Length: 265
Length: 260
Image 1 (tube, each protein chain N blue to C red):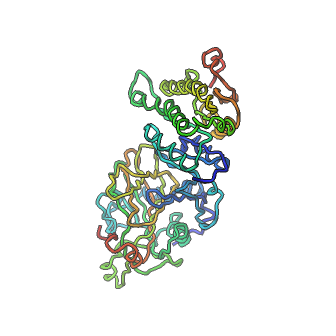
Image 2: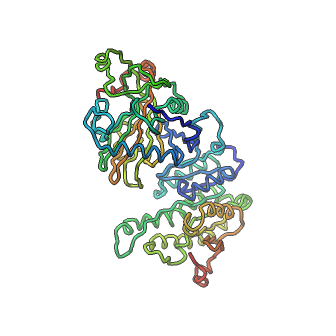
Image 3: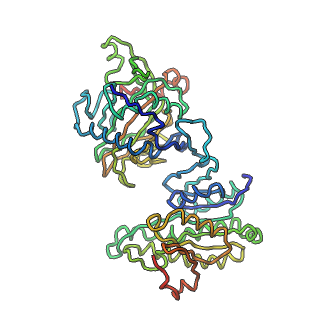
């Protein structure tokens, strides 16, 4: 794997990330990367997209539904980033990126990272209002820099079949980086943020538009209600990433009942 | 109530282009109560602050002068009342009211459509809300403080447009232009009535920004109107420069001088 050598100080264009409190704590950033590096990311994403859609379980192409993303009401094609990836997108699964996100959000996250490219074709439906406080199983197989990536099939059953042991962690931070999008007010495809799980998707407290080279970051708590909103005119593309923390920390803080199992949704 | 050392500015339309520029340039100079409707503010407020992702604990200058942000739909009279009461409760006074909220929908009269569905809203936001907001501040705070108002040079600035001064060669701006023309006339009437309570009232009528003139130029003009002593004036800002108009000009005597 050819991981990039870019340091964050070279590729980050905006060192002023806006930390907001309403309807729950989140961070938004415009112009995240330098123009040249963003163009590289865009080109890399486009190259993957141009391979077309594959069958469930297929590697290297977007698929409609992979086992850990059987999410009713989530209308995306997804490609999970694994250790086989190369090029600029590897910045999202690098140790420096993981450390920066954990630090800016004041999180003591593990090195377990799940990262995927998400593609919503035009006309994708609204998602459902949810929190992302999900249980995820990881097998210890870290990269040289210590980042331990989630891959398809890393369930307790899959781990047993592979002769290993899976470790439960819970999502602690969610990040969406928006790229390769056309967007204008009214065209949809935003991420809606909500006060309550009972709020209708069409009535968000805040709308985060999928503006190219912008980023949304929030802690996964029982109150981080959000969803994808229908994109009426343009496809919606993003890099979605989660950091994690030990399950016992989450149970001690909020109780087990607030956690959903990502593998079983 | 805060201890006040700077002038208190109530700014509507704070998340628009002009509002954002004004806050960026003048947050150190004013305590700004920033009113916005949908688009979030791009500035530090009581609810949000900037952080350097690579130095998350570092103090940042952008956080030194947070705005007092209030989300409100000023199209509702109840919301106007709530905003003024909140600002007076928080700061204890209002020295400057900038009516910068704007709403426009362009379209041909013959076609109907979106122009007609927005007629009332355009007139309300662009002409009536500035009057109602100023009247509410006057009733709640300025009315009994004429000497203090004069001493502190309190005033209202209505952000109008050159579209309210002449019929633009660009079609489709009938409702917007008429609403801004109404705002210009209302500004002159307000200046007469507010004179008794020692509050100046002026308007700023820029051409298109940032395409023709810079947004910062318009923001600087707002500050100069606040610092000046004129009342009943409309400051026209176009690519030729700036000039003041008054009621005589609006009556048409000098209409040939208006250019985009």
